[in-house]
Length: 207
Image (cartoon, rainbow, N blue to C red):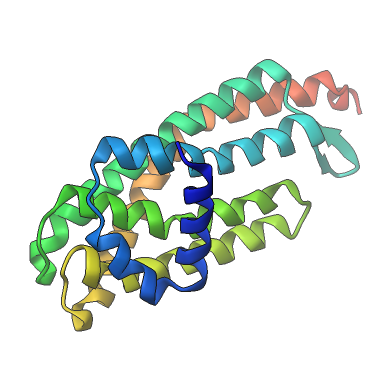
């Protein structure tokens, strides 16, 4: 795993996406290679940020400091990370399945590139989740930029006509929202249990 290469790719896709997407599309790669050399690193950022915020730093609610117990925090971290890795693949599968409907060419590796490199914006922005109040706004901005990156990338990776890339992106994002909601439901029980445990441990139930 070449961390210098990862950093260079992150910088390039975030700052010069219009010239980086053709480079990405032309690179030989595999699903395994994309996961091991890029996705497993970047996709860890949101759950790690959530762990730091919810378990180590804590959240203040109505003047009460709430922290997840370490066990619940680690459980949520692992579950969130595994779900994130699965959602990336599922989103790539959706992008690949939609290709022919928008004049593109099906290619699972290229579809995975589309998701991995466009989602880079959200993954990196998620570092801000450890910050109070403003953190979620930064993450949201990263998500919006990720959608824009997907729009720029689809004509290169999936060979979709430029004039159809907007619709392609919109449909993929809408389906992605549904997928993400389902994924969130899978781990919501873990988070809610951890929050409840933290709340009672803090003694807030006696207020």
